[in-house]
Length: 249
Image 1 (tube, helix red, strand yellow):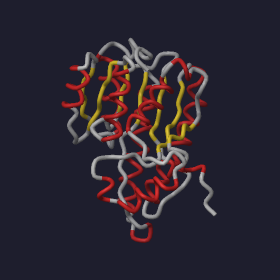
Image 2: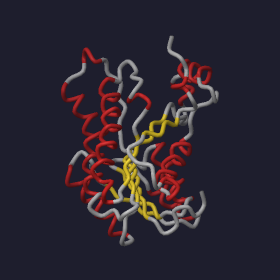
Image 3: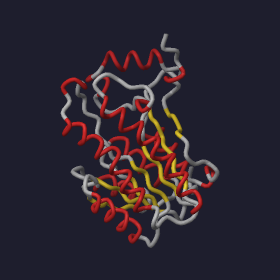
């Protein structure tokens, strides 16, 4: 992966989160200069880590629930080093709420953060991305395999997959590629303690017998942003250790 994206600039939204941080680090290892976005989180340690390792990174705050904030984020990312080559729309939330008791406000909050922010950033990025530029949405296997309590989350991720396909169709003539990465269960500190039965069920069922790691998602994003994926657009790359290959009957 080293040097694969040398000279490129990548924007990663939601980089203060566990998966977003992993994506940003893998882009930096591939040689890209990284714009790490956060809303309420802190990316200063992430930026310092990348710079200490010889990479280039900067942090930008923005509330992606506000369309103009999303456009400002993309504009600042492109101005930082005079170009923007890749955008990873990773910012998202995953609350648990039964559909029967869900309010319209709770529904809109998830859809706005997970879906509408990607729409706004993609639209803004398409104005500055060069031919060969790429946009990657972080969707989820729940976009096709819903889980209880995640009706709003699963719907937003399914819509992200279709948004990417629609954007790929419309922006392809300009040489801009748009894809999604759909992760399965990604490990984080404390997950095994918080959800021991779920982790055990996953590792037992997954053909590769482990949880995913943030770098697994990051490597998929780097690949899709690289010249190796120059003829891939409108597709969903599933990164789930094979869990969706399991029969459900």
